[in-house]
Amino acid sequence: MIELFKRLRKKDTSFSNTSKDTALITHDKHNISAIAYNSKKLKELKIGSIDELLQYENKDYTIWVNITGLENIGIIEDIGKYFKIHPIVIADILNIHQRVKFEDYQDYLFLVFKKLNFKEKSTNIRTEQVSVLILENFVFTFNESSDSRYEFIKKRLSNAKSPIRNAGISHLVYTIINAIVDQYFSLVDNFENISETIDNELQGNFSDETLNKIQKLKRELILAKRSIAPLKEILQYILKSDSLLINNKTRFYYSDVYDHTIRALELLDICRELGSSLHDVYLSKLNNSMNAIMKVLAIFGSIFIPLTFIAGIYGMNFKHMPELGWEWSYPLVWCAFLCIIAAQLIFFRRKKWL
Image 1 (cartoon, one colour):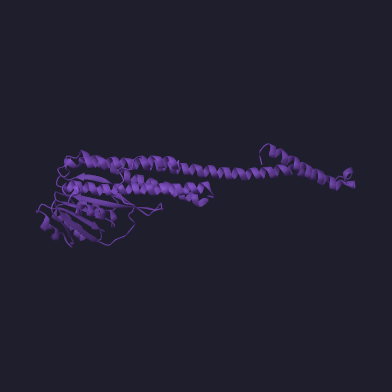
Image 2 (cartoon, helix red, strand yellow):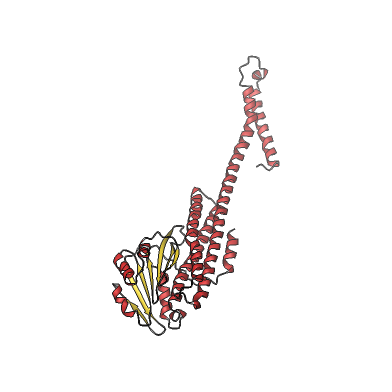
């Protein structure tokens, strides 16, 4: 099963342009970073309030504002007030337990999806909410913690020849979503490595801890599937949306990331089947081990049954038992015992029970 998974995994690697670095679980304090760019210029801004952004609003710039940590409620509320964002949307941003969704408010779009943080060779997954506000010239992203993948996006923005510099808001949002989807494939790779480790344990000396690993793997796979699956529907809504904020030229890119999401879900399903297979293998190995133990005990029991029968006969307290008076009766009984044991062992060996 492990080898089958590897072959399926290697058949399509075109989706994975991600680095090997995985986003580690962090709990960062509030931080705001902003980039204003167009086809000719790029400015990385350090801002402390929304007022500092407004000078770029009507100057042919696309502005990406990335907010890490949601402790500063004031600036999020200021964003809502200035850009006339519905209070429910602001509440959804601050409440990090929202379902994945896409909402069209005509003047702006609101998108929520899940980012999955993990450590390599660990089944512990931490889900984080990523909220995105899409306006005519602004993209606001709200994150619980920092993510190294955003640095990758910034490097692409710094390249004046990169398509993202000339494609506007819609392409920027696609790039952000694509970075998160690429992370899903890193997660699948991690699950594959863990499954292979467990499989190696099952080939050797496994223990109850092995079962705990399998059960934890299955639980985390369910969590990952539950977090990723709704994004497929969200991307369908985006593709069907007639909002002017979604550039028709970028719909092909959204279709591509939609295909990647489906592929990630398919690989997760294979991982889940693999987890179930590992659980079945564990139970089969455990049953075989128990059967081997019971086999040994049954053989010992079979050997001692006739010996116990003979000892029981001569242990009866009858007065007239001729054999009890024989001089060689005791050695003869021992000879009988040894002959019976030898005969049974030869019989078991011929039957290949030993």
